[in-house]
Image (cartoon, rainbow, N blue to C red; front, side):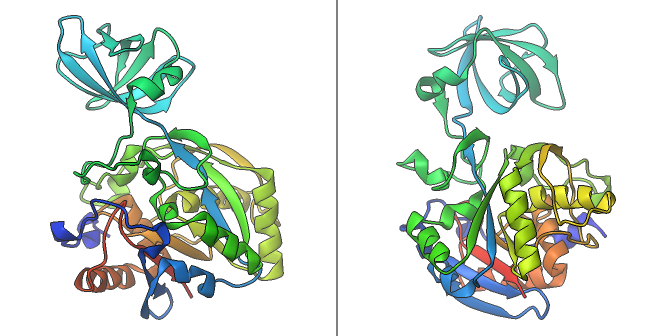
Length: 343
């Protein structure tokens, strides 16, 4: 298996620059993972595609305004992109600017000072602020849109899911952006249950794999949590014959991380509560323990995410679906359209 096996050509015009309104008016490509059959719908049709006793598992992480500007003592401007909080004052971050080595101090514009305390790989650094940065987010922080989005959004909440609660992500779990509160209410009236997990999304999620083979790639680590209430709902759903439907690859990573632990311990239930770091890397050949269906967006070529959905529905089915989607004018990536992969 080579990384190039997960490559495809995407015209720049297919990359969505702005979200559609309303959220659930985006298109939805149905993919039967067994047969490869495709069907074209709209996201608002989702309530027609779910069954009583199904369980939707949603990632309730919230994007933080993690893009911050600062100045060096010499006056040069630098950019800090906060990726993950390590403790009250220390953050793992990407830095833009020259000479940002250990001991270098910067002053956040209208905020606290910060010092580089460790040089990590590439432009990644450990930064220690003089005081907690979170209270300054509203005045100094900017929502870090992906680099392939060149248009500004008028409402930053449009890059948050309507159910976002737990602050901590550098990027949105984009499959959830299609849901409106009204659609969620309609789904619940059908007897479909909702459950929540948290996974704080890092920017590495969207990075292409640069190694020749996926096996040589070092997967990123993200913090996640599957609470007791969600574990109970998953186990009840499985026992009742319902489907566990992961909303987004981030939810897949949480569910399969918990499921893999239970499987290794030979547990009777599908999952138990779980909290901690996950570095699960799902590629073709992986045996899914928990997830029965996936709602997801269209992913970047040669990314770990296209490998994940290829593991679920086969590489051939996914690449064919992407080819059809491009021809049919579907919108790709974070503000793009969605897929529902099931049997």
